[in-house]
Length: 282
Image (cartoon, rainbow, N blue to C red; front, side, top):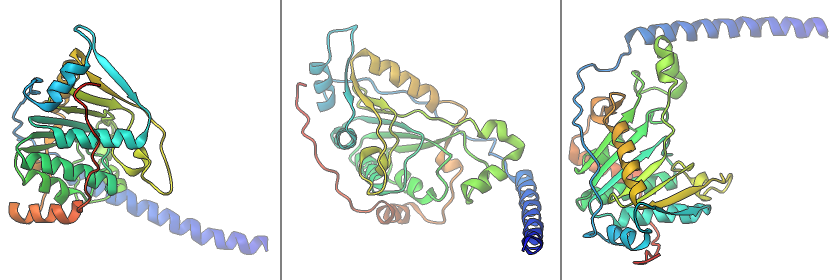
């Protein structure tokens, strides 16, 4: 019995060794031909200041303490944290600056992306900065957002190899592993330069208690006052960084803008964001 088990293990080891060699060779070949574009045009931009001409600006001005103090409210509830983001997206009139490590391709992520699309359509300037680690397979969704106008998307510290899965991305980046292992974990959301949400939540079902299988308990804070200006400045530093690449410089699709807009509707779905009453004074 022992001899038989030993004889069975030997072929497995041989097959494993062959697979390892093939993967190493593939990674070597991929790493030799994948590189980021060197002539990328980045148009610098800055956060728009808060204004009492907007609904969110008036709410922030009425709710925040007198300067130089800032106001904040902790949000431990997942559903409340989601509704707050969706409501701010819907109420935004001038700008949305959005920075996340991960926007999942699930019901929550698609609802969030659809909200950004709707904001851009009604004339809100949308700047979406997302880490490139989990963007594989999302080219048409991101390009579809861009195709609506008023929206910009940048990928932070992107992988040179596109159109492949996460493991293959790392395999193709062995020659620059020190670079690609540095990821952007920031999670920041600023509406009309007046109200901001920061904390530990990415955009996905588990973070907002929408999943039937798992729940992440985390914490966000809703902020108003001078601290929002400081956070907007931090967003601008990342947005204008040489490590942030415009999505259109990296992502590819054979579809023209009208077709991309139609494709976005298919990919993002038709989920309607729930409304959360936003009083004039908190």
